[in-house]
Image (cartoon, rainbow, N blue to C red; front, side, top):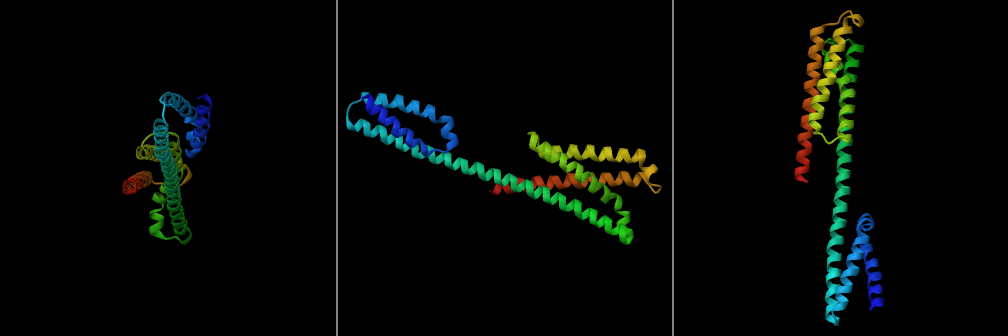
Length: 212
């Protein structure tokens, strides 16, 4: 009887290879122990029919549960890839907006385009707060479990407020043509722009997740 039980355990240990490696490392020993106890109970019941029904139950459970674990692993991998893809799109999108604003501002200064120079304060604010704010938002989203949109709102509120306050103190010293009201308005526009952009991004991401 002991030799039969030992053989059954060796066979079951081989069958456990049907499970994913991570699952097998974590739960394999306990599953083998449960099988060993169950096989002993089945051995006490004499007859080939009892043995056959025991192994049918074992194989049926193994096929179903192993398949389920593989499906869950695929889902986790796909979820991770989708998160990486969304992060990459967000980073590239923000970088493109910042670069476009910077190039537009530089073009206006080089060619002295009046309309662009008037709008220059807003572009300056969008570029500066976009670089600093989005880096902070990205890091906080990755290292915390806080709501991403709430992080964006608070981050851009603080970044824009501190930037505007700093310019209010030193702006007239570094720029003879500094206008406090226009600068404050530029940072208000920058705050609204980036918060609105993050709101639209979150809404789009939710819609994509809901449809997938």
